[in-house]
Length: 295
Image (cartoon, rainbow, N blue to C red; front, side, top):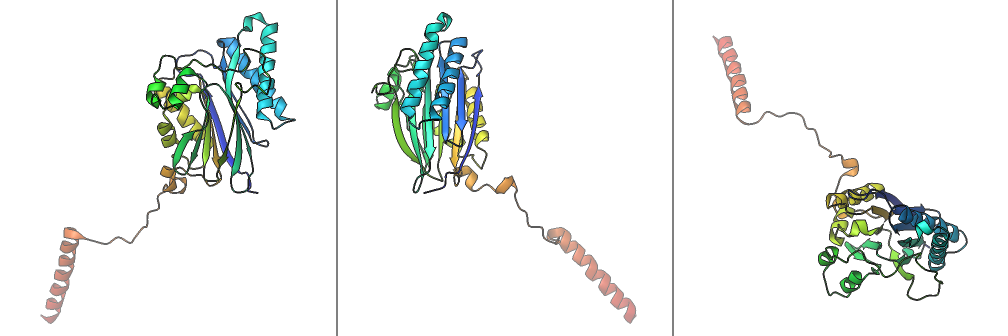
């Protein structure tokens, strides 16, 4: 079995337009659990739904490693609380949960996903989106009918047809939790993010920022959030970046350790015109001294 050694960091930000941050994230390194949640319902309701989801999933994973069961528990707890509090009627969330465990040659990742948050895998010099967007625009993008940038600008981009909490669910419903698996090699990385990031940055842009990695996962998460804000920051933004032990971004691979450039110091050597004149003066003085002695 390969040893599970990961560097990870997370950043969440309100963005430049919204007044409240309805995003939440949760990391449990001992369990290898990484979660991003994006609340739906506006202000207090969206924030509350995200908080309930985090708490319910944390509680469920204390006794099971079943991502489908954990997300279903979050769904039903959100729905039950909305029934008790009319002011939170309709609250829900979308989320992406990743459980990482040690494997034979690479870490195994089990993903539970609902909605349009995302998980990207960065490995072998390439980046790919592992999750599907459960949205009308996401479907036609995944089908190749429109391109990534066209989808990012689509007016229906933020509509979703799957969420966590709007109605009671059972774990065996096939149209609820999307479960996928992949491998995270030691020289690979993954990103979990809310749509506030992916609506502003293409996969290529995300990969280019990940290439800056030299050992600081939180620094990469911060760079990603800052880039999304520079691109408009129209929504809350959350990034959870997870890197394997041997992962180094391509631009960081040739960067000297700690950013120090070593300079070899040599003894000074007189060169060029100044050196020629100086040597001439010395020779002249030597000849003058010889002639004076002979005279």
